[in-house]
Image 1 (cartoon, rainbow, N blue to C red):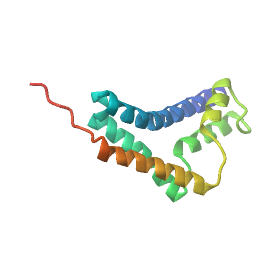
Image 2: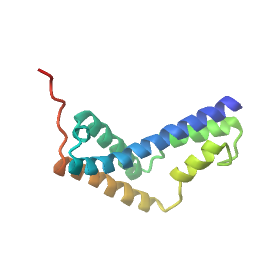
Image 3: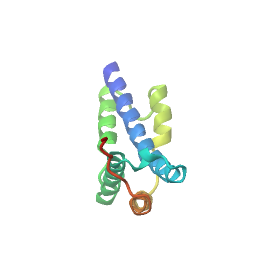
Image 4: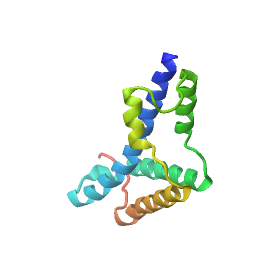
Length: 133
């Protein structure tokens, strides 16, 4: 049962990392514009960020549970966990990631956040990587 617990904790850690990338990425883009950080306008970074929030918004609108959540719960069930009473890592990362609210709240919050990300493309446009001469 232990490998399933470790895999579930790993999936949860990846999930939290993606959430931090989406939220922190927007913060860094906005701050980076004022601080003239060139990396925040890197096209690859910006595309990855846009795709990540786009997937979240699409899932919310379609009423689809995140595949990472589904995988984590399956692994926890295989490990014999009855719910969210697992390891230290599991407990604290889940406290950060999961909360309860009506579906419309998530759709609204994710959609507004996605709109903010799209707005940064207008106000803080990405730039393709410059070729070295």
